[in-house]
Image 1 (cartoon, rainbow over the protein chains, first blue to last red):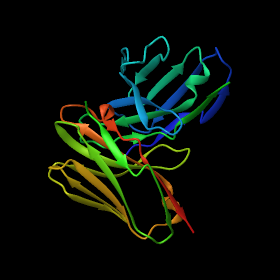
Image 2: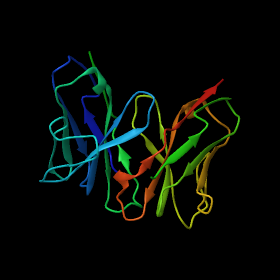
Image 3: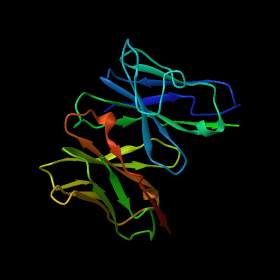
Length: 115
Length: 114
């Protein structure tokens, strides 16, 4: 199993500002992902964080809005840039080993409110 | 298009009662199906994972079933407890993709009342 921590756990931000969310895993993992969960909805994959290279973004998400870094196998950051109230969501970091049969582990999430 | 549909959307039961949550999917080619429990304000926690050849898997009071022919799964909770109040999410992965690109259901919100 993997234990994931995220910082901050929650934040309230002003429109137009940016917030960087950190994800730390207690072991080296192959795959790291960032999800968004809007109120009352399920999880939507934002991007796959690739170690040492640019993240792979899903349709509807772009690097300028959600820049991601992954300097090593245990750490990643997601920045939510130029925020608007529509960005108010829970942002979750997730990890798994390579291969679709492996269980995914999720962090506790960062609850973001944009005013 | 790969889809996962869960029912009911929400459910209220009394403590000690049993309940069954449903998940129908159209993901193809099928690799595995996972059930997660998500407490309010927390990340999802894995309950069970089943591959094509498995039709039942238990985790304590949670029992998941899978019918790969009809593309249906159920999660049965026995002798419910107040702590079972949570959202239960069904997630299906396609063969050849990594876990992160799985298809997520919208979840069933379960409320257990004393």
